[in-house]
Figure 1 (cartoon, rainbow, N blue to C red):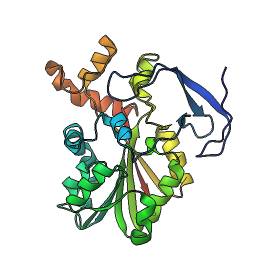
Figure 2 (figure 1 turned 30 degrees about the vertical axis):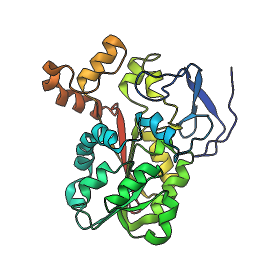
Figure 3 (figure 1 turned 180 degrees about the vertical axis):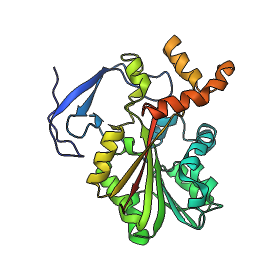
Figure 4 (figure 1 turned 90 degrees about the horizontal axis):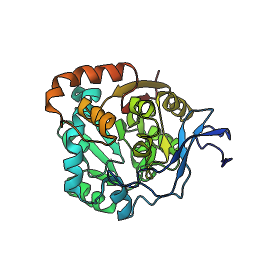
Length: 296
């Protein structure tokens, strides 16, 4: 069996195990690799890891691998609706007259919404097409987090980074840089696909190739998020679970072994709230959120 002896970039352990071997998602829905890939799990900090050549976030084909296009309009159509859950977790009252930074914000769906509340919106996005779009909208814009630390160190009230940390080559350095931006009582809210997603266990060997993606270097659950946040120097970590996709998508996976999106089985809509509550209460939702703070 193939071995991997490199040190974990989060905890420095060299004790790994393979948790999946097979094809993985290469880009848009339905596109999978011909080559088999290994997904490794660090036995110490419990993070999952795809060992592959680092990707260039600035190149257009990187964004095409994530969403299938570099079009801001397509990004808005795919992501605007997702901002509702983020605002529910944050609360709009927390945003008024605050300095808000979105790290890895793509075309800026979240910042566009909070701009009316916030005192200042800071956008960090390496994609050049999206970067220009953010500038046009009046967001203070940088390509990388370390570029804005000099100007904004200790001045940010709220930083967010939604489904970004799994893409980053060095997630520990990434969190350290964001922590430097925060005021003493500021906090960071992150989200990432959940390794404890119930479909990953229920449809083992089927859902895996969809869940694991070539653009995702790292795979986190609540335990590994707590570990890395503590390692990055945060004093407080609060975990939240959020089920983004509805019961119709889950049933479609069980029946046809493929995704269907949201709202395809209208007769089941009344069950969505119960389904969402159940999987979130068990910590088995498709996404996990964490609020990281500098104070206990």
